[in-house]
Length: 248
Ligand code: HEC
Image 1: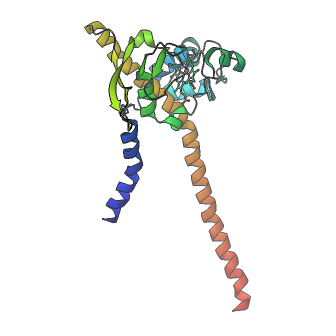
Image 2 (image 1 turned 90 degrees about the vertical axis):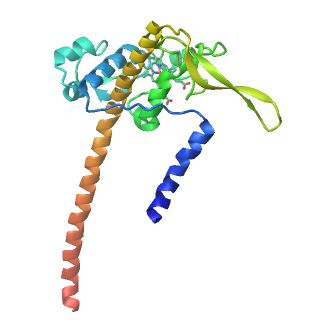
Image 3 (image 1 turned 30 degrees about the vertical axis):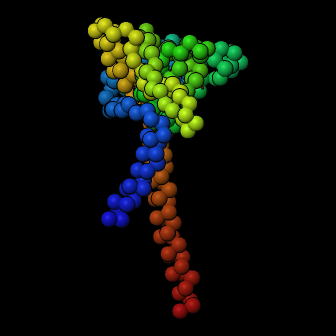
């Protein structure tokens, strides 16, 4: 019974979020053990994201090793500006330019999957919608007034917002965006949008993977600390015995 109560208390914050946000998170359902997906995600990342975002803690070499790509394949498929495989995924964009263009510097994405979670990233990439009032012409369901353009619109097709009318305490009605819908409803457009979901899954998979090495490092360090404590305890015990021998 106590376990049940504990489990329920842990669930509460997420339920509260679901109730207040009103928007359902989509499930990324990605698998970081799937190498083909990671390779596809890496390719999308360097082609479509690295114009603006870096992943400065990630080395090409490491990606090659983990994803099973030779140095040649790395150079041909993933490295456009970098020259040596030992380099990290940095970009040339300058802070001032970025602020002029987007109002904000696009953040480094090395650990974004840990900061936001994979479901959030998946939902984010899938819910850009047309909004003429915004400088980039788009808004986003999970990132209100986002400064990023919908860089993959050609792969997804445009989406328009779905509104719901709500009445506030004072009896005024407002239109709120509760979802998105494809503008083009042809079978061809739908098939394209479905393929885009797969692409985004690969992309999110890659983002989760690049956030992982640091996680692995932390686990490894954790074990070292515990091992140290255990050994230290042994020493402390021997010392204690040594000190007390004369007293007894
Ligand atoms: C043309 C420049 C540009 C490109 C290309 C671009 N982004 Fe962005 N991105 C931005 C900007 C600017 C922001 C900051 C938005 C803000 O804070 O309003 C951003 C924000 C983000 C965020 C949210 C970060 C946060 O604060 O939590 C994610 C995730 C993201 N981008 C992912 C991507 C991915 C994945 C790609 C490649 C498919 C990509 N971006 C391509 C400009 C870009």
